[in-house]
Image 1 (cartoon, rainbow over the protein chains, first blue to last red):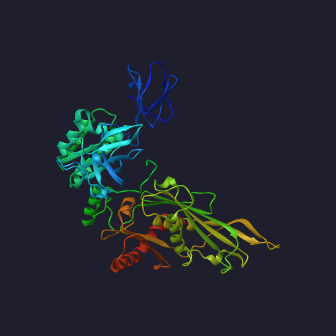
Image 2: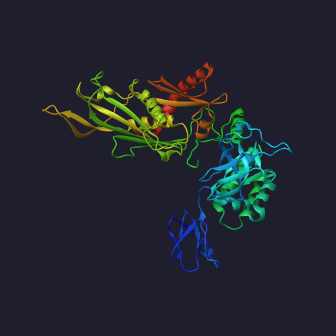
Image 3: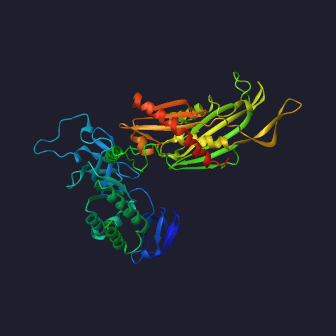
Length: 234
Length: 273
């Protein structure tokens, strides 16, 4: 699993039947890195898709992702939301407020801050992101989305979120069970832990640090499990 | 819309967490309410300047350069050296800083630092006279913020003091034609007063010393005290839309006076003079 650090613009590989995957671009028959990241030569395999794992960086929005956002501005019919990306997302009023029964929210009120104001934290789904507009969010797609009113906010590199979740939720469920707390995960590199226990928060911070440093190694889930079991006895 | 930029907005759940910590007498980075972040000082890092110093106050980094050149004195002070303090907030230091001439925050910082140097005579300005009424040394203090993580004033104050203590300039002599000639010999700048800048901020009803960026974003107002001359208040600067009660003002001033000596000693210990 040899990984090399590559700079933006560095030549990765030249050949036929190669495709530019994540964070790379193709010129003639050569694939170049588009970001500062890690390149694993052996990962190309048969499909010929060349990917790069970014070392750091902002979140790249994708339709269908659940993200944890912070309201930064109220417009007339929508809110502007910070999702830790190179672009702010928009939450239209229609996607945020549920109509109760037959009474639809039709009466125009000037102050949108009655529903959500600057600084509020939301758990939202990206329902659209393409060349037509910035990412559009919704709070109505699923149960569990909406304004978050308590909890401790943590940050992790967005590139490490898949590892934090694990295959089939293996890592995140193990952490939830061992710590006995509710945790929600945003694909944009934000995590909220619902606990007041300072010790549990410290443990979670250490786990995040471990995952950021060792995400590319194998057996990480087991090592984190052992770590959690050792601190539980403290 | 995507070109808009927003100053640091602390999410409400984090604000709530910080308020709960404050009620328990704690801060997010485990410091006491009157505790300073760790300081690192490096002097003499700009070879072309007569004096320079870079200070790390936690993650806030400020660089001060001192240039000394022969110039004309101010008409109302014909036998004293001149002083100009300038500060810049380059975009590299924070997403909040825009390119261009110094904005009001940068200008305010320069004026606060100036206030501790000029009237209390941190520098012996009389020693900078070359030909009374005609030629004196001018001291140019340039403050550059390299990374903004809160409390730029205190960091700038420390870097400026360290830079001045590190300043050496060429000795001037007047030749037979009455012209000023700069010799090779270097003399130390005479620093006779050590101004210390201490900034306190208010979050809810709590007074915090040396706030980091997040605490500043949550604070209603700030008060900087400038202490010099062996422990006397020589300046105050209050900023922000909030207010201080007379009791809070009293507390801050008393606290500053009691902290002056230890902060001064900490700076002098870290500066190899």
